[in-house]
Length: 144
Image 1: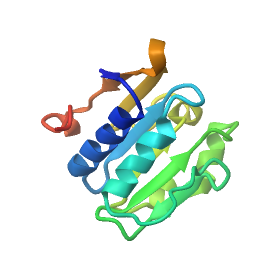
Image 2: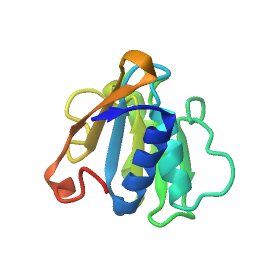
Image 3: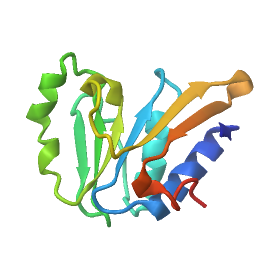
Image 4: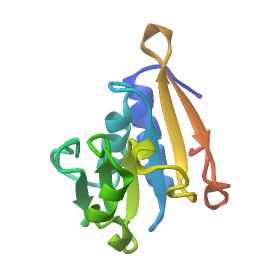
């Protein structure tokens, strides 16, 4: 799928928000500046969050418990060893959905049930999005 511009990225985030269920996991991969956080922001705002949606690069986890479903926005960019992830408490999110940037920092095989979205740069400012869709997302991907 090609996302022509930031507006298309926002539209995808909004469409994903309509499909999101409790305990879903969405991972966002790709190089710095490709639009992972823009996509996450659009999804969180579409669920009704008012105010800033900061990148969790330094906090690592930014929970949005007021949303339905609740969302934990996670950024693993600063993780150097997958063992550090245990300290984040991601196993105690309950029914919150996880929206995770830089999932490759978590090691092989983590979150096998995740909808895996990979973004990459294309010419002219567009982005290429590649999705790996688990069974739980069949019928919900691509979002409308």
